[in-house]
Image (cartoon, rainbow, N blue to C red; front, side, top):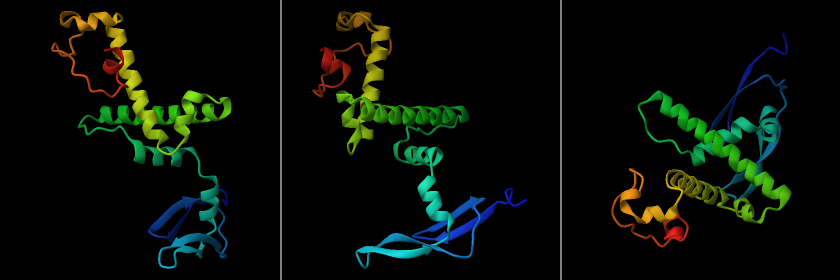
Amino acid sequence: CKLCTVKATIWKDKRLVGMLHNFEISTCKTNVLRYSPTKRARREVTSPDVIPVYSTYYNGVDRKDRDTADWSVVLKSNKWYMNIFYWIIDGVNHAQFITVQSTSKEENRDSWIKYLKRGGRSEFQMDLGLALIEWGILLDCPNIADLKDKSKRPAYMRKTDFVPCACKQCFFCKNG
């Protein structure tokens, strides 16, 4: 069956690139551009036909894998279920960021435009973390004035005076 055939292609770019595919490969090769550090310019290199097709049409799984490699929240754990939990959190975080980016482009949301710039993902994760911490504290202690009384604070909060960090972003700096 021609459609059921799976082929393996290995191509040496900067490293070995291995691909499993069902793409019909002819003997002809395609030219792709690669940067040459010795010439300090792009030069043409021959590659299998499947490489430019993959580069043009790769989609969600590869983008999510790249995103997880760059922005993972995984912590080391011996518990297998914690690794699955972190993987799910990474996926949700990636989906949120993509949604915020596309929404800010389409609807011109001024407060979200900052996430479109270089370093926007880092800023997004910091803002998301601070918002989740603030939301969690307000769930446990809806009256902010109660936080000043050490005996009324939730059990996970220290019972000593708060030390301000002067960041003007975290819950305690914004609320005194």
